[in-house]
Length: 602
Image 1 (cartoon, rainbow, N blue to C red):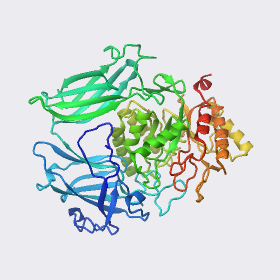
Image 2: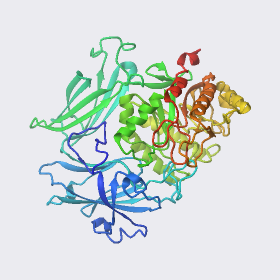
Image 3: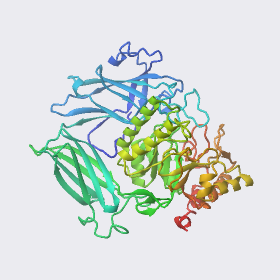
Image 4: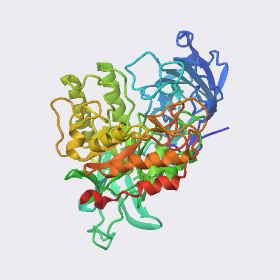
């Protein structure tokens, strides 16, 4: 049975594709004999089956074992004819954790390192003429290697504290496309908001100057702009002026171009066609979309589309009871966003995980801000630095076009940079990540080290759980004092210094990006939270008490509450692990809605 059958790359859609999710042959290789014994030829001891795209540790995989296996193998036989023309058969993997080597018909076609990002291989040269093809994947995920960016995945046999079940292997969709020799490889959209323009950059494959690129931009059923360009080079760059071309006849600001925001998530659909200049035949069709939006900081505030915007985020770990890192159904992504919005949150911080593009698609469509955060490595070393930088490059390549992502978070709580407070080398790494992300993506903010010990940054992000237990008046009063204004937020650090030595706030907005963590157990299983309550009414009362301290602050410009759901032993979610509300969600929304922007601007 094929699971997760939706097209996996929502911003670069082709109609014809083959989903390879479902049952694969599978084997553990604890003795690491597979390469020596030529399992890559496909005749090894594949004595199990697994349900892709779920890792063997997940219940949905049909295996559901938590024991450690650093090397695992997959095998799948498929029928694909060799293309009769110059087309290419491309094998795609959404994500494999951590290191993958892929063989087709006994030939290695790609080796990829990185657990959260996609990769592909042109398998045309190794296809069998009889149409029978065998895919074999070797995955290496050494749990003792602390130089791997693994985020919240625990290296021990049982989850504990803030650490969750490890994930090894394929955890996003595998698929195949047969693409024409002349095709579109990628496209990027950059909003030039103040100018009322969109910049489009298209990357062609196999095209020549006689070939053409057609495009049409639509808002709903209305075609707003279309055109045809020649491929003077394999890369085309052009701009659409929404004002001068009278696409929108009103003034740009106010009732002009509809911009993307959580309140009004307007998206423009775009269709592309590659036309062979010699024959006039359309060789490739791709559908995409973009949103017009701008995010920046000014006067100690975050601005969205030219207006001050207060972000009300919720921490989202992106785990599911049966699928772990992988949502069992595409609808689960939508459900999480709808539940968060029903509580009055306008976005989330995806914590220590680059989420499946299908989640970002629903965030774009439904209007939900996302802070994108790559998994961290536990230690600092040259190899850890190289791996994290490589993964960030692939993350930005994959997710550049999603308007929902407003902020990149390259580091969290000094994970992987444990001596950053005084170590100039680790400080340089933090600064380098900040500048690198701005160099390859000028459309977003970058928060350098979420929580404390920040270097150069666009947002000062503070973590503070010191609000005390319910009824602890003295601790709560101290908490309110710590949050009272900018001076207090920057000088009365709860534990660690807000900035690394030699760095200070340069006027960037301050957000409280972790706090709360109210534990409420509704399952009867052991668990923990930063504080605890005994009933749904107490949960609402405690949430209101903590939020009152935030709303009294004249220095905060947004927050991220911990957290959306319980995860394994953590019971500090507003929802249970299986997404059941722990209290009246409309009451949480009423509390979140109490804050409005004019209170901060006064």
